[in-house]
Length: 192
Length: 192
Image 1 (spheres, rainbow over the protein chains, first blue to last red):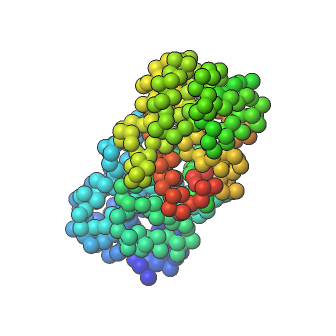
Image 2: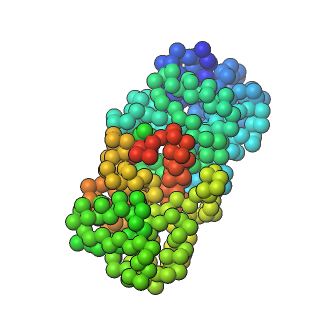
Image 3: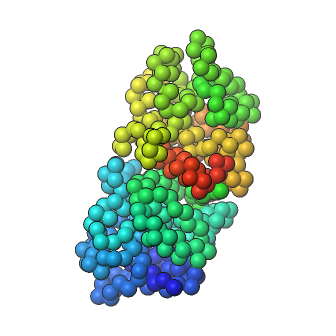
């Protein structure tokens, strides 16, 4: 039994909480009104848009020490929808890891639309797979275990440096959906 | 009826030629022994590994002027399998476009394993989709038309700057297959 704290109660946070509880683990959902509630999960998912991460780290950075912290963001420039706001040779996950040196940071869920996490299917055709990147094998195994227990596949996609590629996938997928070239319940599925 | 010249007779070149001919268009396959045969296609696919592109441009750069040139490469560092050899804020396609200012350069096919182009299926589950990026709408439409005629979906994925994201997808997909986390007949499928 793991406890997973999910900071952010939007559609991504709710979909991730659904997977956690479906697998028999405990989801602790914290919203913007819960700033005084401490984080208790061994795994903490930052289920907020990229611009909100800085505030969470400012408020809760010390609480996150010793925990597995999961970055799900796609750091798009939402004005242009044509680039990311993180350095080309970096990633949001790398920035977050640098700011949380006492946490084990993972990238995950950013290549999954919320609808595909909730349904467990990409476009009704392919089982949803969560791509997970990180440098700590135990942290990755813990998250993959929680996701798998919830009935959704999870795939170790390499070191945290691969977050750059995961963010590229998330970025392209968002641009295609925003242009209605794919649906918000579809996207990139992983097929073996 | 279009003629598509495919430079490179490996498994990618052959799979692409199969799609071209299946659609009733003409495929001209040129191998390494055909350096003296001129390019005749309106569309020219550079179906060679990234390190071989420079030589083709040196030999055939003038012949490529006025044509649609399709870059299919994944410019991996094959020693480390941990990075690309092009600048983080660029792409192989951007480099090729800079070297061929009189051609209309597209990125395509680099997110498709040859087996999925030959079978038309990703993992036997999802119809194969070719992601196409480029700055010239007519050039993209011409390639998408040829691919679609051959029974394979093709999706306009944006400007040539999106080649960076397509190369990230190709890179990650190759690392997952090399580690046997996905199969060479599977990978990322596009589901609507």
